[in-house]
Image 1 (cartoon, one colour):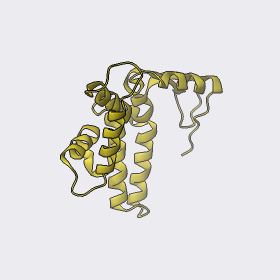
Image 2: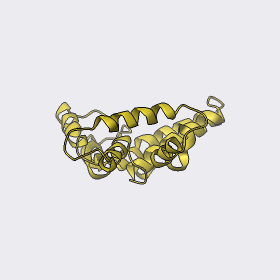
Image 3: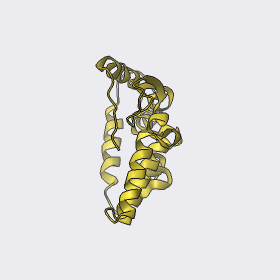
Image 4: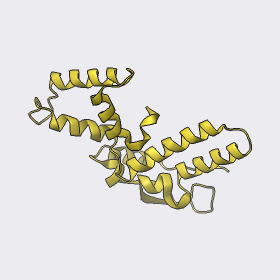
Length: 162
């Protein structure tokens, strides 16, 4: 299948502005083709990210998943690859639905709760240090309780993606 996702650059720029807002993944609407599968209409509409990526089985990620499933059935994609891809699609679906936080939202939540954060735009050095230590601990086996908790917050039951 051929996709036509063309839109005027002014609409792309507007989408960029809309994406900068707080919780834009779940709250903003973006310009996107009503029919990107090569239909007759070239009209743009305003859609949530969830609608663009997953809407009515015709969203971008829904189409990608369908493609991967067909490749698997044809023997061109391993079961392991399809399973991993499916989990990543599910991760994006949960983030778009607000069921899991985006990494940016997760960091904002952690910053807001940090003992040294006084509000505003100044990020305390101690917070940065804590995040670096946490990031380094994510690659260590066994993982520390703090690293395991962070992965659980970010990935839910999809933690094996880490």
